[in-house]
Image 1 (cartoon, one colour):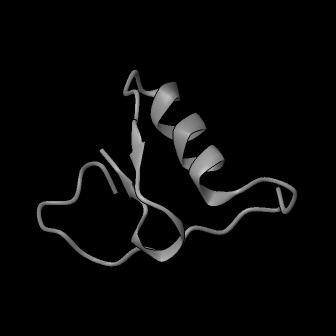
Image 2 (cartoon, one colour):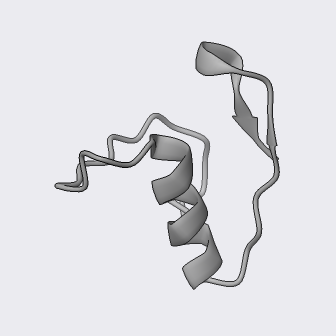
Length: 48
């Protein structure tokens, strides 16, 4: 996803059902040295 040449829709699957997507996304980006700040709530929440 980070290396995609264009914006697109991606599907992420995991067996970690006890964690919110924002927590999993934060862990994934942290693994590559990127910190995400979150703004908004529910369907309009954005990682910036």
